[in-house]
Amino acid sequence: MRRWMMQGALAGALFMSAWGLAAAQDAPPAKPAKAVVCESCHGPGGASTQPQYPVLAGQTARYLYLQLKDFNEGRRSDPLMSPMSTDMTRDEMRELGAWFAAQKPPVSSFKVDAEKAKRGQAKAEETLCTMCHLGGFAGQNEVPKVAGQFYEYIVKQLTDFREHKRTNDAGTMSSVSGTLNDADIDALGHFLAGL
Image 1 (cartoon, rainbow, N blue to C red):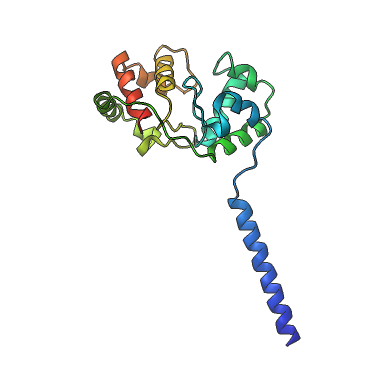
Image 2: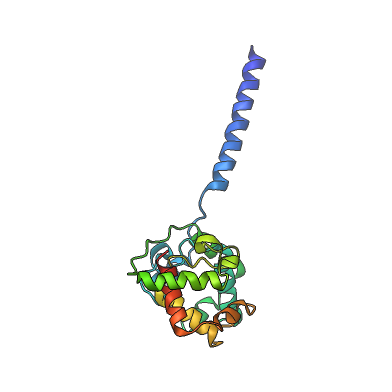
């Protein structure tokens, strides 16, 4: 009887240990100290309310890490972001990426022009945007989630890629955006911001 009780207690302890380990692996990452600085522009949890600052909440962790690394190493330039990234370690960049990726993105309040959004969807299909950004424009790995991003930010980034002001994309976005005129970019902005 005593041996049976000991085996039961041991089995229970092992189960609780395994359950605790699984729960710890499913737990969201702890908020990095540097996230507070990011939130001053990008909003609480990366849920920006300012169209000039992109929504970071729900973005892919790998994309966020690579953008911070590109700002840090000079492959991408911005008067605010470049200095913010200069003292970051790779581990801090990874932690920030993982934490913002785990946050819930805000619901877009952008007033979509339905006709422009329809043209934007057609242009996205024509240029095969979902081959990289995936269905629903949810992004993957180093390809960003663009669904629900600010209209103004989408337009600026597409324009910057087209005009080669932004080049940290291995040429893919520069090539695609080179085929877009201003009306196309405006339509894509309406389509993507409304998703």
